[in-house]
Image 1 (cartoon, each protein chain N blue to C red):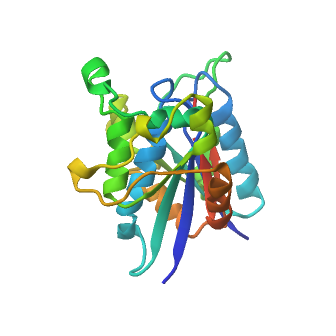
Image 2: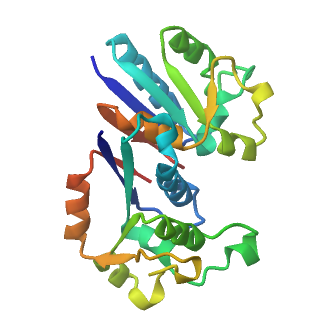
Length: 137
Length: 119
């Protein structure tokens, strides 16, 4: 039995490129990876939004109305429903004049118990040190 | 020797990132490492067969086939490919197609994961 920890670092803003959505969909795929592994083996995914990437977390996105696309907000909520650890850089939020009130913190309507954590960058650095592999998006 | 999992999301035409990733696969294989190569997003363009090799655009089918013959394990994200109209019947022989969990499973026992690019 072994666990491999992956850290997904999202640095790019939403809808400008596919990267943030790919980060979320790849991280969510950690929930079905067991089909390829031996019983008891696990892959875990932590997601951190830093720099311009924090803009992905803004709530009340209208991607479905405007682009007919599932919003990044909905993907974040799906990740919370699947109990993925989501960190958002406090300093980078402040840089955009944003607070916890402006971003997706929970997905109660989906039945998720996990909440987004707004943390200092030092906490994100700690997560990056603890994972086995980092993937930058 | 080790196992490398290399992921690339950049398109074949439009940047040189995919060229770099394929060259990196070649260097690793030549050193005797096992390499899993994952392409998703625009990187799935690499999986299309019979691409015409102009001198003005990257063309990687030939080197990729040579690498596959040497043991490169290359897989495209099936959903990313289908979303772009890259179907199984126009996928290069030997190029696998799986869902994103394949990439994470490959990362599970990799000695190094090298995640390259994006647009």
